[in-house]
Image (cartoon, rainbow over all chains, first blue to last red; front, top):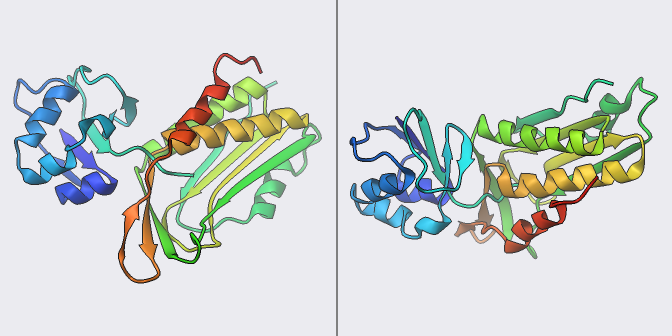
Length: 84
Length: 158
């Protein structure tokens, strides 16, 4: 599973992307957030305001935090977008 | 009539607005209106040295293409170009270009407006400020007004 981070979430975590093996019980976006926060204070800082964090599964926006991660290859976490 | 195919480009380089309009309209007799929007980097009253634009490669193109195809369908556009730059951009330089072409003007205005509204809120780009005094700038915060702007496209027949 590839995790990708952008903008200030990337800066707080200290890396742009990583390969991880998710524990079996980490099977939704909500449980992913909890697991990430347990990995250290840099992740806690990045997910300090979880409601503002946007999620893309295989490059598609997903709002529902209960969405299953089964079969997903790439998860991106980022703040609200400011393009244009 | 076959649907127009949107021309979406994510690039570091600048773009030439006149050349892009020519490329879109050259040799065609069906286009009666071309609306061009370009977004530039502001200097924020002289405090800003540059913006640094980060993007999510692959998803950025796909998101813009998705909404560009919706715009073509909804307003029956003859053509649509969207170019978004990334990297370091200085005040006065171009950031984004949208060109919508249609038979009549209202469709081109609406199509370009629609694409810009969705591009701002859905395309994965983030701006970081670099300040003139050398201090580390902030990441630009998303504006509620941009999100609110989307509602005007709800439940409205084109």
